[in-house]
Image (cartoon, rainbow over all chains, first blue to last red; front, side):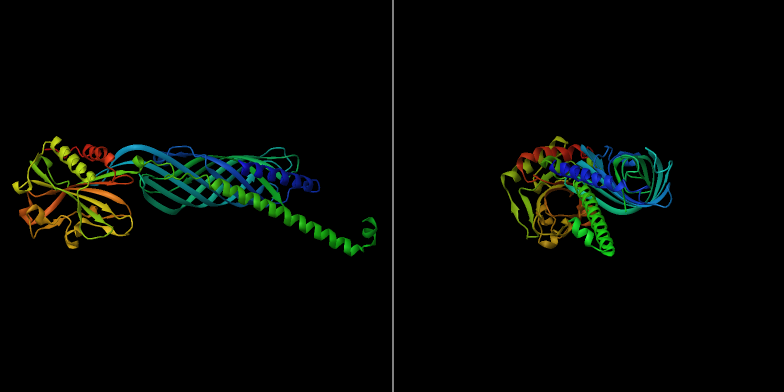
Amino acid sequence: MKRIINIRIWILAIAGCLGVQAAFAQVRPPFSFNVNYSIAAPMGSLSDYSGKTSFRGWQAGLQYMLTDQLGIGLKTGFQDFYERVPRAVYPTKSGDISAVQTRTFQVIPALATVQYQFTKPDAPVIPYGSLGIGAANMNYEKYWGMFVDKDNSWAFMLSPEIGVNIPFGKASPLLLNISAQYSYSPYKLAEITNFSTIQGNIGLRWHID
Amino acid sequence: MNTRFREASGKEKYERMKQRKTNRFVRKTGMMLAVAAATVLFLNSCSKDPLNDMTDEESRIYVTNRDTTVNFASYNTFSIVDSVAVASNGDTAKRALTEYDRQLIAAVKSAMQSRGYTLVDKAAKPDLAINLTRIDETYANTYYNPGYWTGWGGYWDPWYWGYPGYGYYFPTYYTVYYQERAVSIDVLDLKNADADKQINAVWNAMFRGAGVWDSSNINSMVTAVFDQSPYLQQ
């Protein structure tokens, strides 16, 4: 809790500093970075494996605006899926295993992004669409009781996103970011035939000199 | 202050201004990076540890394997060992008859009887033999493979069942990597042992996880492995 309060104070302090700075700037500096909290719901075969919506995630990115409305960047993040299934008997090739299964999955994407903003940077609300393409580190850990079946590998990932940036005051370099994102990867392992999630993000974007 | 400022040359003022600007930039960027790093660390620590809240009961798995070519109704009688072998940290063969072992023998015996098999003395040429082994590999980091039993001097050498010189045959699924305590129940085919001078393992059950050597868990563990093996029936 203390940590959260500390972060809040920092965010406020930085918001203050940047506000002063912004008074001199006519347009936002082209370079920005963002940190978001994210919630993701698994879909398809991933949800058959571990169906619970994940409230343990974050996302961070860097972006450079080539023009007023077109930007390129990089983004990464983390999402942790977890579900415990009560004791059940699972058939094997020549027998059965009775176990409480704890099915976990962690994904860390590393994507290149292209973003298009639908309004000029001085608008009070800046809607945008973006597309991320790259790779994701997939960490599969299925616990049978205390024993784990593990796999860690990389897979191709595609991730379109739509969202809005809301500046804290006109031309402020600090913006509130809210977005919805879909992620797909042709990842295959055991019961998972592909990776797909729908994700909501909320956080801050800073433009810096 | 004002006096000093007036005395400074234009170049000095410019230098000072440049310095202030750089300082501000460094301070600002540093703070941002610190916030970003703190946020990332905070959120990352939110990933759930599956073992953290796991009870002993949840930690245990009950694994059964069988010879799928065998008709278990073709056997009528069985016999069970009079003590339990202890395979401890790669140590040489040792047998024990603790209170736990007595209860384990009794539980397996009555489970077999409830499936219609008749308990006989090992001298009476039973169709099935049952070996019991406690495995303790908590310290030694070794492979446990019952196929090597005889090679190690024998936990349950075939002579115990009246088949001196025979070998055991264990399918490959018996090889399990251990760093734990476990219990193994092996059901062996003596009825057809003469055919190829070999005693085949036809059914195996393993208790793995926390508390498998705790006698208060014996009944629920034995019940579980028999319940998931309905084919094991006279």
